Length: 64
Image (cartoon, rainbow, N blue to C red; front, side, top):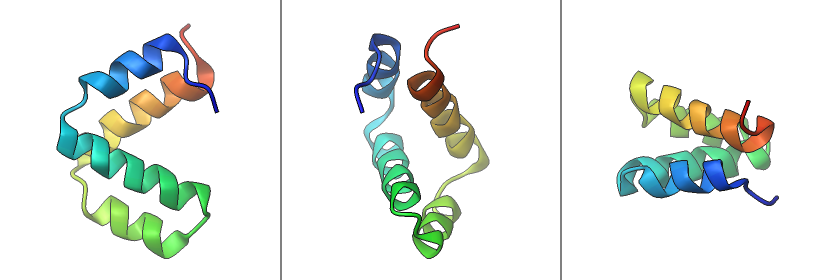
C-alpha cells in the first residue's frame, strides 16, 4: 500500500513509542489475529488509539 503524503507526514510526526504501538496494531489487524489486536489495544491508552485511528483514516481515505 502506498501512503499519501499527508499520511506520511502524520506518521513521521508521531512520537516513536506511539508509532511502534500503531504499527503493532496495524500488523495484528492485517493478519486478522484477534488475540494480537486485543493485546495491542490493551497496551494503548484511549488517546493513543484515537490518534492511531485518525492517521489510519487519513491513510485509507485520503485527505478530504
